Length: 148
Image (tube, rainbow, N blue to C red; front, side, top):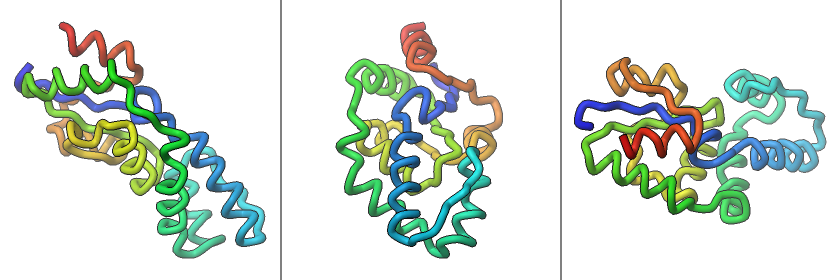
């Protein structure tokens, strides 16, 4: 598997960050006493949050760090598949539209951060892994890749 590069969908494969994101948006709106009408796409939502809240990323990071153990748990089978792939020489990246702060906290709590070389958007990950990364969108796809 040396030379193999995989781009894993964070939410589909390792840790669904959407529920924690939604909880943070609700909490941030309540605390700031503003209505946060942000796009579903979280990359696009960043601009709206910049306007509404200013420096919101540290707030998200703190909220996510405090609550991550409630939302993210390691999955033994998924982490075993990651370890097998990494041991065989595969390069692993993780992509998401979630803010990097949230993505990295999710990876750490899912127990997958050690095996991941790069985190970013799908485009960022593909560039970092050489442009030929196989996109993996589910745990089942990851398991199949790790066995074959």
